[in-house]
Amino acid sequence: MTLEQLKDILSDGTPGYFATTNGEQLEVRGWQYQFAEENKFYFMTANTKNVYKQMQTNPNVAFSCASDGYNVRISGKATFVTDADEKEKAFAKVSAQVQKMYEGASNPIVEIFYIGSGEVKVSKGFDPIEVVKF
Image 1: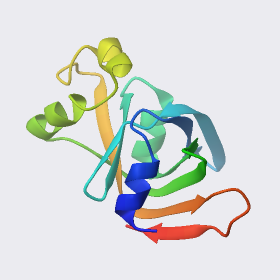
Image 2: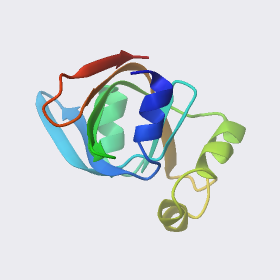
Image 3: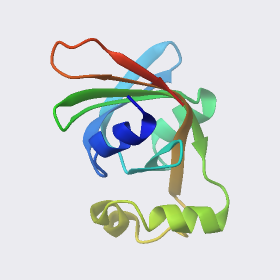
Image 4: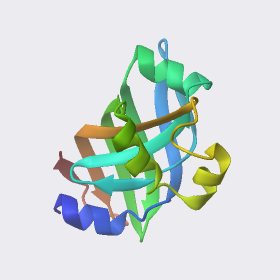
């Protein structure tokens, strides 16, 4: 499977579960995948949340979901978008529900990040797991 095929499977706004570490303890919570661009899978959070602090301490993260009949697991390093123009462009692509909640990319608590290097594990039913490195 190619990265482009994977992007077709993974719909923008797909709900799933996001994992970080809190010391040696794993933390998993419901989360919404936003979109993919080039070799980057984008997400969003607020810098007031524990998840943000956890990613600052250890940027190794994972997202898991079911989409279009496939089980998808994305894992890698979270990188935060710091450039204001890039942040504005990314914010314009996040789900309307999330945009409404945060009101704009210039909101000082908004943090947009992506997983830009890592791997995706994809499976359908009991088929073998395919691994796509990016």
